[in-house]
Structures are given as structure tokens and as C-alpha cells.
Figure 1 (cartoon, one colour):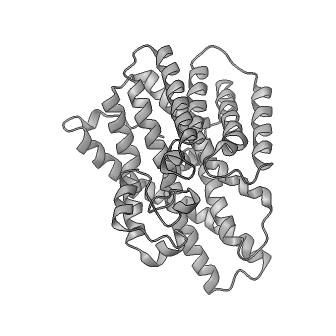
Figure 2 (tube, rainbow, N blue to C red; figure 1 turned 120 degrees about the vertical axis):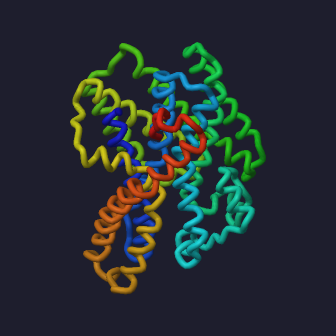
Length: 352
């Protein structure tokens, strides 16, 4: 386990929770514009994913099929559970999806991680039935590409092939019709995974940045993120203003750990394990808290608005840990057993 990456998972998921809580509270109070950059937690997650995929496969050299089995067992079950829960809860789903009511085709496409036509397609935004899944569609696309590169035994060539493949996919996307599914699915945000791969390769070398430089790099990257509160969904602007700083944040965290400057805090490690659950459950928590705030008329004061952030953060972490332990992990274990018959006990889970 790389402790600094676990902590960054907590930070990234909490940033996304904060962004959506702020979007809800923004209807009742004026929010500082720079805080919108908390949406960049997604970009940190993408860089982390590229880093972890390279690191984990460099150690174990799984076959492409085994790699995809592990990733599907890790990512899909809880996402499918949350998607079906959302579809089965019309009152909440109508609020959380901002009026988007999925049909059967849209729902099945979402479960298959396929961008699909929806009520928001006119803006070139292809959300699945449960909106947080838009990032998982990109994750799955990356996994498919990376799995293909695992056929290459030589790691140097595998690295070059991975970067070249991501670059080629993005170039195809740039040539696709504007606002099309291809332009969305092959957008420049995919290069954030390439950044993570590069960091993974660097971390496997003897090279090392100084600890002060790593710390300064992380601070500068955070400032750069905050200076661009609106960077779009998946285009080049987002890659430049949030994706590149996310790479420096992850690199800085990894370097600080290589200098043995990252302490182990069990509570944060647990929160890191539950970060995926936090990402997928936080909209329900925010929705429930918003209903309570309306019913209790707590939006009318500054204290009430601030309390909303505190409660949603605490409740979000608590619910995420419960969901991780009692829903996500059992579902993952069942999926591993189904996907690796007769060998489930020996399959080590790979964290995202």
C-alpha cells in the first residue's frame, strides 16, 4: 500500500463531495467562485488510476484477461448497485440527476459503461443513468486500452505503447464531430491517465526529487487548480488547468513518501479504502441532507449553510465506510468468485 496515494484518494473524493455540496448550497448562499475547482478531485483520481495500474502490473505482470477480471470485479459491482438503487428511487433520482430520467436503453448502456444519448446530449455531455458514472466510463476505456498493452512483455515498450495509444485515441477524438459520443469518449482528459503512468514509471527508478521541491510543487499545483474554477468537463482546458496540476500533486505526494515523510494514520487509511464508496454514495447523502435542511429551514443563516458542509462531509465519510464494509467489499468478493471460478481465494484485489 502506498500511504500517500491512500490519502490523496480521501482528498480527491472529499473534493468532489464538497463540490456537489457547494452546488446545492449555492442556491441559498453566495459561494466563492474559486471553490468550484474542487471538481478537480476527478482529475486527481484519473492520475492516481494511471499510476496504480502501472505500479500494480509492473509487480505482478497479469495477463490482459486477468487484469480486466480484476478491474471489473473491483469497479463494476458497487457502481451497478448504486445505479440500480438510483433507478429504483424516483423521488431521489429525479433530484440527484437534475431532471434526467433514464430509460431502459440508457440504463443498460450505463451498466455497460457505454456513452449513450440522453436529455443532455445537446450540450455534448454524455452522462450515464447515475451521473457519477461518467468518470467510470473513462476508467473502463483506459482499462481496455491498458489491457491490450499488457500483451507487450517488455515494460519499456509497454510504456511507450500505452502513451502512444492514449495519444492516438485523443487525436481521433479531436477529429470527431463536435458534441458527438466519440468526441466525448476520446477527449483530452484521457491523457491524465498517461500522466499517472509516467509517474508510475518514474517512481520505479532510482531518481528522486528533494522533499522541499516536492512540497512546493504540490502547493503550486493546488494554487494553479484554484485559479481556474471553471475548466469544462473533458476538453483540453480541463487537462491544462486541472489535469497537469493533478499530475504534480500525485508526483509530489509519491516523492514525499519516498523520503519517508508521510505518517500512517489508520483513520485516513480506512477513509482511503472507502473513497470509491464515498464517490458513489455522496450524492445520496447530499440529497438527504438538503431535504432535511429545507424541512428545518436551516438555509436562512450563514451558520446553517456552514453546518450543511460539516454535516454532509461527516455523514458522507460515515456512510461511505459503512457502504464499503457491508456492501462494496461483499459485492467485490462475489464478483471475484464469479469471474475466477475455483481460484477466487488466490486473487488479490487491486485498489483503484
